[in-house]
Image 1 (spheres, helix red, strand yellow):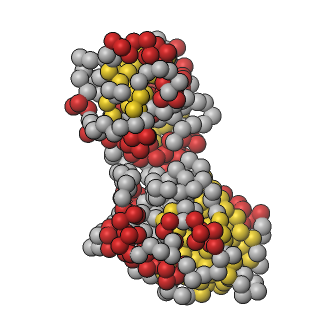
Image 2 (spheres, helix red, strand yellow; image 1 turned 30 degrees about the vertical axis):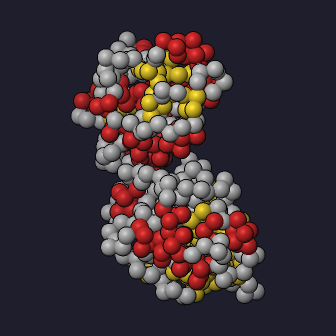
Image 3 (cartoon, rainbow, N blue to C red; image 1 turned 90 degrees about the vertical axis):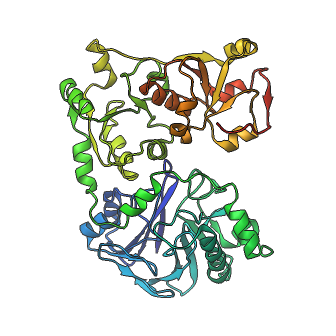
Length: 466
């Protein structure tokens, strides 16, 4: 028997490859399915089942493509409904693969169809539990992401409480818990950076599994301080119920087309968004006017999903040469399937053609400290929790995730110094505002990490979010 966790850091997502006697299962696959097929070939195995723990909201799954390419059966838990061929497993049903068995445990709460898969080894011992978004390491799945349900988030939280106590807590302490996500995912709020653990340790350390917490307390604790729901989540969940999505192979083929300057101009004229994914240190020194920066080396796909509201938006990319396919792949993982190509020669081609360029002014934290007494305007674009923990006195809080609801609050006649924690999000913020005509913006080099080392007055009192 073989169990392999396939972890994708930029999405904080874990898929699983399980094999026994030449038969394999893939749990919660990403959209690019060839790596799973190659892994099975390397092990002389045939993929027999594709198990989905639920209809994912934070990424587009590869279940339909993988089933078409391998003939494997797609399996969901009870109550799942989709427009492709699949098996709706029953609670307690056993799925045999080689000499092992997978027991379906219906655990509604995160979503109604959410299910965990209990692996029973060759000797009949309960070995591992693949929990999807029902149980994370240090947390549980949020109950406010379900699509098209008549139940409230409070109702779902109550169901999750029952699922944990009736289906998971009674299991043996030595079982290994393998969740679908780790720290960094918006599917929970307190996830550990660890990607697996024993169930016994989770019973001892995870707040949601405490023996002394009743249902009302659980619901209150689970729902308080919930993170905002990224706007693309519902769209991805709908895509995961459909068989009509574009194939991953076609998305890559069309998205990695090298565009001449003239072809690039035509696509932009026809409404394509210029997405520049180079590192921010290069972007600030020069970029194509009205392009958006979201760097490929940062938290790329989640910020794309948070900020590009139209999932059908055509996109042309400016990126480091040789990384074009990586960019298109990571866009497609969260449902942005309409990349129409990249500028051949990247930004250098634009610059060498003597086209107009834009830049972002930067100032060091030490300069901010000198000028702070003169009453400069500070925009802090970090998350609410970061801002609440500590911020500069008189800073205005404009979270990047809420940027489009705050544009009218930015005075085009004033100059603003913008910072995040290190410099990635502030450059995103400034690039978007500049694309919409706001130009009196200065990036604070090094962000709050650098400002914290200065003597600029700071406070941990929560200022009203603007």
